[in-house]
Structure formats: C-alpha cells, structure tokens
Length: 180
Image (cartoon, rainbow, N blue to C red; front, top):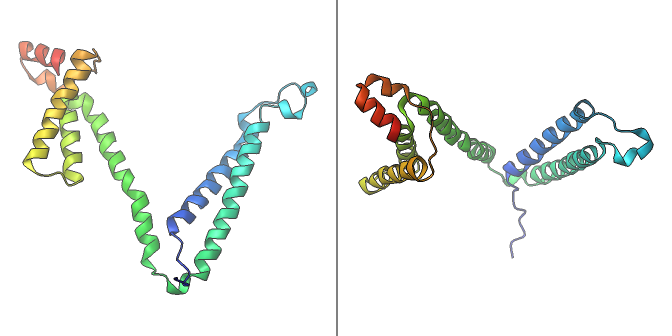
C-alpha cells in the first residue's frame, strides 16, 4: 500500500479557476441581462432568480473546489515536478491548433472551393495526427470525394462558388461551379 500523497493534476485547478471566473462574470451580468417581472407574482418568479441561483452555486462550488485543490497541491508540492503545470497547460492549449485549422478551412472555402479546401483540410489533419503513409493520404483523398458526393449531389447542399473558378474558361468554370 502506497502511503505517499499523490500530486493532484494542475489542470483540474485551472478548470476550477476558469469555472469560478466564468460563473462570477456571468453572475455579475445577470442584473444587466434580465429585466424584472411583475412584483405581485413573487420574488421566486422573477426572470433573474434561477440564473442567479445557478450561477451563484457554480461560483461557490468552483471557489470551494479551487481552494481544496490548491491546498492539496501545496501539501504535496515537495514531491512534485515544477514542469507538470507547464505540461498540463500545453495539453489544454493544443485544441486551439485544430481550431485554427478549421478557421483556415472555412476561409479557404470561398477562395479555392469546397472540394479543394476539404481535401486540404483532411490531408493536413491526417498529416498532423500522424497518418502520413500513402495509404492514409489516399484514404483522405477518397474521403474528400465521398464528402463531395454526399453533400453536393446526394443532399444537394451548395456552398458559394470559389474565387479560383474565375480563372478558368467559361465551360470549365461552369462545370466546377456545378460539381465542386
């Protein structure tokens, strides 16, 4: 049986702190975001009552959990590695990289078209997560074709034409606008 105290994960404290900040911020906005209802119906029927109660509980619970976490972190700090917080923060920031990929994908839709931007998006994501073999790149390409077939032809979902299509002769441009 291990009697050593295990070091709590720093990300949990960050999450509790984030919930405290968000809960408190929204709690402060309740008077601005709601208007009072008829006073004769009672204070419990006011539009601000349930949001106020819920956000107050979130802020109080997050405060309590945050202090508990930091107290347990401080008591186990002598056996902890200082780089654990930095490593945990990096793990929390990684999803933003994929969010940036998605924003670039949306931006490219109007420039190079649905097919090419989807193909690039799928191939870049495949490459980024480590699926770099020709087999996976071919799979990404085929998936892009299936995606086009599903959305453009089967479901009839059309996105705006790309600026790239204006560079082609009229017949090719019309074909690209109708199919890709």
